[in-house]
Length: 393
Image (cartoon, rainbow, N blue to C red; front, side, top):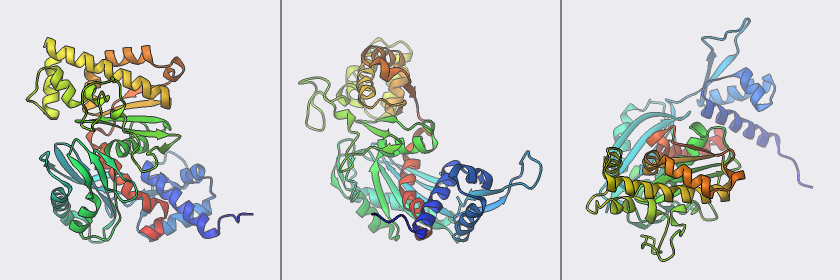
């Protein structure tokens, strides 16, 4: 027979559960923690004392209790002191942030990114952004990790970017390149931008409380972050969610992945601009100009947007039929396409989706907006701390 968990293992699990709850929900009374975690008051007191001693949380009285009698102590994450660095490597820009425990974005930087910039060239720029933010870090500040979001296929075991057509990266070791530039002894975790954005929205955004979620992210390409049963669904090697490469048109337009007729060749940046006759334009600003022109009555722009919206609804219907999500979130440039073509998306979804799968699905845009990727990258970095607080602090 397998032995049950030891007292140390139980304590470690309880410490992680308590810290994770405070990290996600913010300042929480001991009384609430007692009810949520199903532990008695003395155990909660001992756990919070351990976390306070490690500098991870602080305790104090609530300013407003609304109740008679002695107020319950409030446990707060030490957001200023305990933090992670987060990066988002996107088609046209590089973004960096210092994110405190509790998901608070404390500082940020943004740089333009030339489309031919490789990982070895991007790493010094990203490290430079961290160095700019470092003077504002408290003297007793503790960096617990670094998270990186990249629009591409990321190998889970070592953070190698295997393929990223939007950035032109093939087998680019962004994690190793950053480690060499940063020179700090903390784990660096790399993830796909759609996956980490889904993680963030599920943890503290529009999908909080939903256990089955699809987050669609678009730029030049299209990817998805999938939450199934409350867990990230990333596949065997970490390459899950490449929904932009569902083949929807047999012998269709050549895709940058080498195949033909991929979904992103119908709803991605190139497809939209090409259909509108804007062959010399590219980037998010060009897409926003296209959507604006459609809104002002430009017939060719309207046709391009309606057609792409119909294809967007077609793909979403397939994903809804397969995964039966509670919510589909449209992020990146897919958000802008959805807002410009919501009628076409909903019409195609209703005509193609299975009625049982459509009964409870909600279509939403990100609550965290453009910060979803940064917050999600930080969540990757915090995972080690939340799993074993005292060992990682």
